[in-house]
Image 1: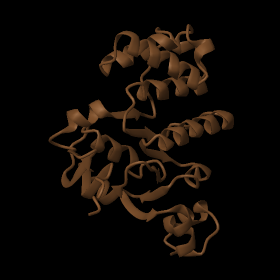
Image 2: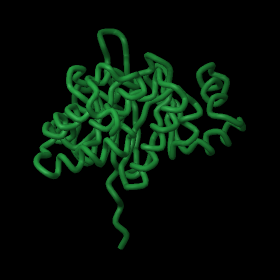
Image 3: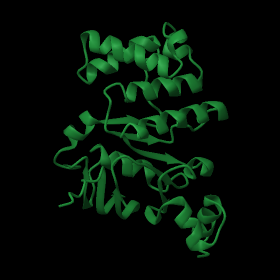
Image 4: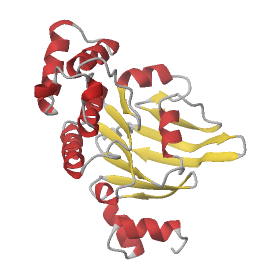
Length: 246
């Protein structure tokens, strides 16, 4: 008998409205465990609103959803304990050093003693921040702050990581290093949902979804989406769908 593994994220007709503006419009989506799912779309497409509903920060107006098996409305507190999250403007404590930020967030997630010290040092080494561990976060450049924000988000080894345009505004080398971190985590079994508007990043996701005007207009493996429309790149797929030329 084959057991069907519960998905990391399962949504059915999820919607959110702000007054007359429909931010997320009946999104149905299943993300298996252990994959990198890239959510693509322009600013205002509904990506951030969707993530905030997954975390229970916003309550959907209609539809249903589970994250790691927990209902996004009734069990939001459990989801937030288990998931790691990096927002577009992740809130580091600028007056604390890199290692102090890690210790603080580790404590928030219940780590202490030798386990916290070991995890702190492991992440400082892994992200290349060890030599900068005594620097206040406010003195770090944008790329280094992103690394630190990422390290704080995974200090508790979350089975699911939600990343909202994590490489926006950082240099190409930092972007490449950041994606290496994601591949390493996925190889270890973590599930990852990452929003991006960099099509070269999306090409390397296991699965992608394209959002336009609050709707999920396409989803699947990058190669399959390109093959369906007989186009060579995801960028051309996106432009074609956005312009209505299917």
